Length: 137
Image (cartoon, rainbow, N blue to C red; front, side, top):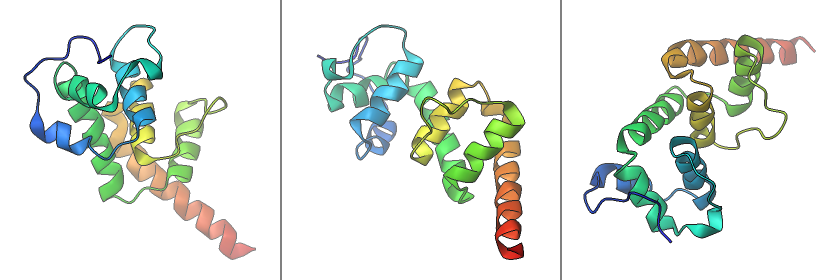
């Protein structure tokens, strides 16, 4: 099965960016963008990639832009999770992101995409505080 609404027309650049992503990450992204109750096993990787690069290309570009910002700024996943929990009361009790791609999805899920600059700065400050505490020991 492929994802619903997959157009023959898709954004090749977005599609190529999704080539090396894990199926779980792609499924999580599609689940965030699409309402429905499908299981991950219902999809093939290429169907997920095509759906994300066609019907959900705009949302996927936003997700990838947040990832790029986190990657360019070399934010730490752990310190960013800590910052999001403290500053925005994001709950990570069920499952914490294990990659910057997952972290970027969490930012979208929490509707914090307009706060990316603040999140980057805050997570870097959080890292500085963490490093200072380690040094003081």
